[in-house]
Length: 271
Image (cartoon, rainbow, N blue to C red; front, side):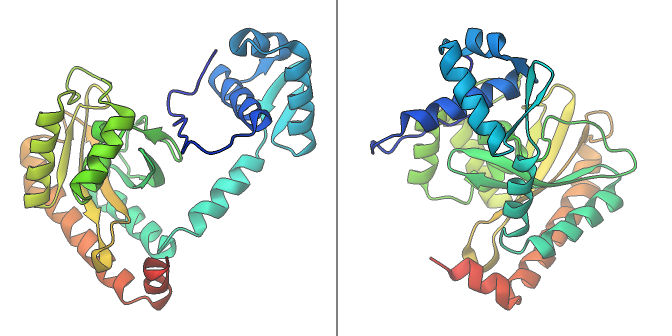
């Protein structure tokens, strides 16, 4: 059975609808295969051919799956859902232009990430003139301990919430620099909390370095802004002398603007 490595598989112990589980498994399989034929999906999922075909037919009727010859691909209706979600996230209209400005000032990749359950999701991503490819494409779900933004967010959460996340995810390794010891991670989070920013020193991708600052307007953690670039450009001197100060200033400005935006305040205080 093929599963999306970023799927959370969370269950609160309540009743489940098996048909929905099957459809999600098929969707994840199509995604992991980059599109597939019925026989390929059957092979990956161990579901019957009849079950796969019925679910695919239903998903096609809702434009969640499209068919090209004998191959099935995910439909762009998912993009409609994702775009709607992103546009309705708290203060998105304030955050997006600031991320673009950070990218322009640093000439690197600037991102804004949020936490959903046990994963970190990149909500906004802008490339500066020298921006490089990263694994943090829009919408990708990553383990928080592997990224600068994820650690920045974890540093602002109560201890019991951090432990709950780690109990669910563990500390899987992405590179040889990934923190895989819980005690070491907690020490890192203490340091981040004290200084106000986090580093990712090739912990998610070899050769990539990032720095992130948590965004906490009105004492509410809504995400983290980060800058990422190749190791040879993001050296210690540039990080400490240029990037960190710029990012701290940008996030401070964001927090002030969000706090004084009535719409954002209403969203922050909504139950």
